Structures are given as C-alpha cells and as structure tokens.
Amino acid sequence: MRSENLKLTSVKIHKDLADNFKVESALTGFSLQKLVNRSLHLFMTDPEFKVKLMSYSTLSPSGSL
Image (cartoon, rainbow, N blue to C red; front, side):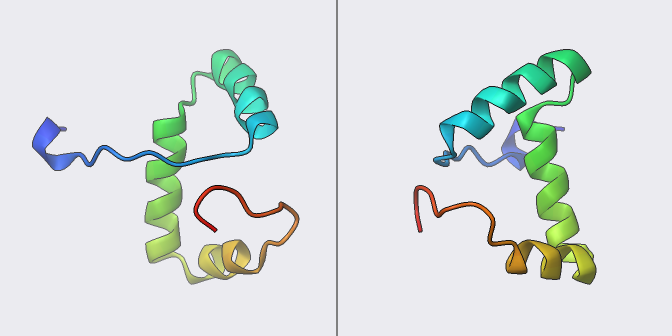
C-alpha cells in the first residue's frame, strides 16, 4: 500500500492490554496495525461485529472517552 493512502494516528490504550498484546503479537506475528485495520473494516462492514463492539462494556474508558 502506498504511504499516501495511510493515516498516521495515535490512541491511548490500557497499558495491561498493550503489554499482553505485545507478547501475543511476538508469538503470532499479528501486529497492532493489522488488528486496527481489520477491526475498523469489520466495524464498517459487519453489522453483528459493530453491535458487539458497541455493546461491549467490560473495560473502563480510556484516553479520549
């Protein structure tokens, strides 16, 4: 993908989740960028995924909330 098609952004995430994901990512090779891009795509194209995320309330708010 060409760099002009990418948007650089930053988000605040829970430290414990980030640390756990970093370990999992090292084991699987599944990057945060892949997770975010695929999650955004599913959120925009899969109504069931969108409802599941919108109703998920296990985590406390972080960053921009």
